[in-house]
Length: 142
Image (cartoon, rainbow, N blue to C red; front, top):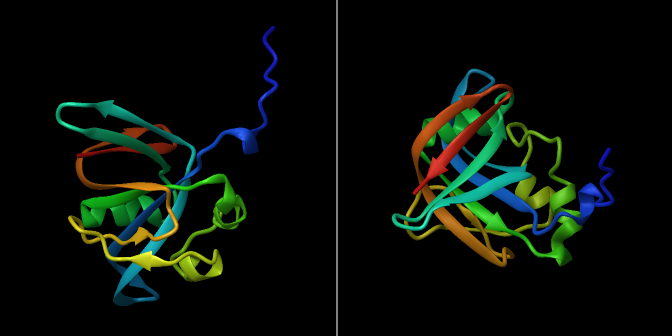
């Protein structure tokens, strides 16, 4: 039996995915920005440059990425661990996760979704593939 000595909070850098989509909230169409913590992510191609994220199939983030066709992967540093953890298990559909986490959003250069100013690095992605995988959806962005 192999026993893990790595704690979940030691797995860094954490990634926050940000998205902007036209979304229905309480029966009214609105443009909404949202964030989600993503634990499962990886590069999947260098040429062309592609990156995959796996998001929970339940919740607004999956629907918003699918609808908008783009997202931003924000690589957060250890100094923002508290901000990142404050976004875990929360759905930004009815609250502004950017401000509640103390993070600043800025406009992206190539996609509609905003990025996080405090991120160490970011990838602006257009959805190329969407794959249902059990209780998660994998988005491959280019």
